[in-house]
Length: 235
Image 1 (cartoon, rainbow, N blue to C red):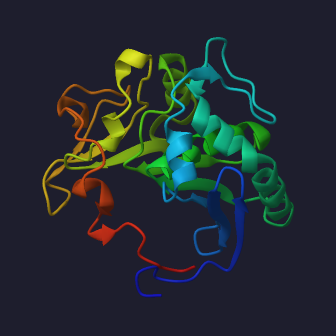
Image 2 (cartoon, rainbow, N blue to C red):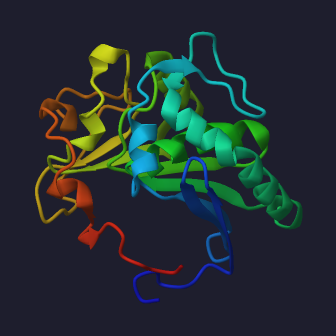
């Protein structure tokens, strides 16, 4: 309770047994916001999803993007497995609370799914403000995709990278991937405003976390803002 500040007024958990995607949709009446939170990697199935590195056209319910937009095939498979359920759930909430905005968030794999969720929800609910923020998320799509995200969300699509966390750069750019902006790189621990760099909003700032070769899944990936990944909070 103290870590959250307050409990969301309502929450709906969701999961898909085939892709092992898990998370929840919650309504925060204090912020007038509907939040979609997606879990990061926690199973063998998640690792199989992560390993599907082929870039494929972004095809998802209600989504139209520029020609040439391609994303991680595993992440897209995972998002599409729960997209219809989340869109339906949020649609019901917005009928009752049409003035509310939407926020999507997640850590690691969950961060990439949150980004795909934001793109999908922005197109399915065009009059609703959508923002997305992730922690330790890997690259999700190609340059066309990142340009689309930047143009659509600007600073409402942000990424946090803790120190030398190797996951944000674990998928190399040589495979055609490109991060979106804005990155907030916490280059020293403990993290603070003074030790956090706001990087180039285009993405892939050479002075940001991309300046450090990926070390894969490491200690820095498991802790953000002093909170150990997996710590239970409101749910």
